[in-house]
Image (cartoon, rainbow, N blue to C red; front, top):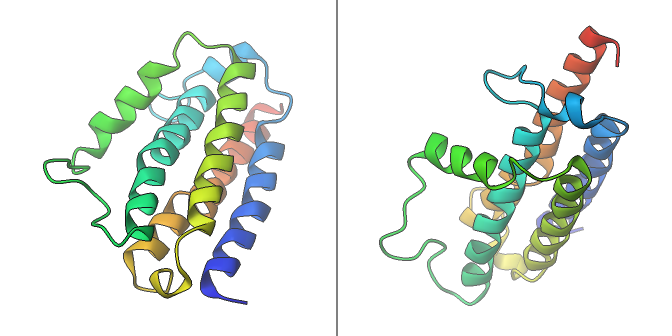
Length: 153
């Protein structure tokens, strides 16, 4: 199995676990702030946003281009995350979770198209795929499961 195949398999497993972590939450649960100023809706929006931003980076890498276009910067991570959360603030929980499914599917599709030689440990494509899929799903899934256990929901 190639490193890319391993990343994609891990991502699929962790995505399934993340879906279980948010399963059954209602609108009030999704909106309740408990992670700083964020609730589950904001965490999911953050994940959607990074899928939508980093998918094109992977497409560029697959074409042999730089991942980030000239003049674009992701240094202000908090600013990006705030924009991602604001973009879905009026969406229903169902729509937010549906968009997460769509953005995950898109991200996995473009990740699968990156040539194997570009998806090796230490390379940019490897880090982008890992940080925006398996790592993200595991990190936030654990946080949500802990929060749910404390609240007994």
